[in-house]
Image 1 (cartoon, rainbow, N blue to C red):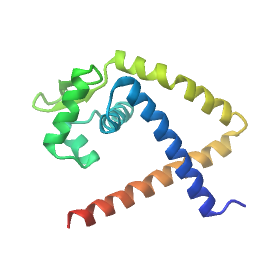
Image 2 (cartoon, rainbow, N blue to C red; image 1 turned 90 degrees about the horizontal axis):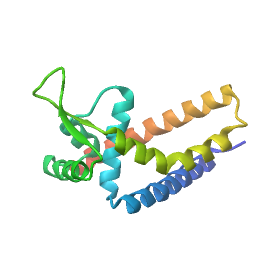
Image 3 (cartoon, rainbow, N blue to C red; image 1 turned 120 degrees about the horizontal axis):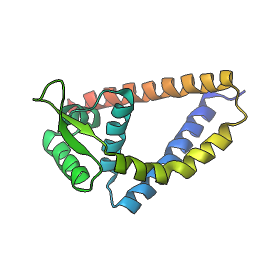
Length: 155
């Protein structure tokens, strides 16, 4: 039986290894970690079908408006994002990742995607559902603790 301490160590190791891999992407693209995190949030919003606004990005990253503007300026000037007016409300700005930037990211992550797929081959559908539930619960726990930590730091 795998105990909670072993699960925590394994999750931490996965986070560290993923962070190293993403750091390599940042070096290859000449991007700061904050920019990469912002880009990941913008891409995740795209997959959910709810584009982020600059304000929502600032909130999600716990950045000031001016710091968020600097991040977005860098991402836009390097071609990684576009700021567009909402089709529903022209007063609102939405953040989008252009197809060319998505293709470049896909190219970098394809080997990792393939390695993950090969590593997961032996898991059946029920096991994958349990793993997905475990990861979702772990993400939610991290988000909750981060939010509590942020509240205490502001006091």
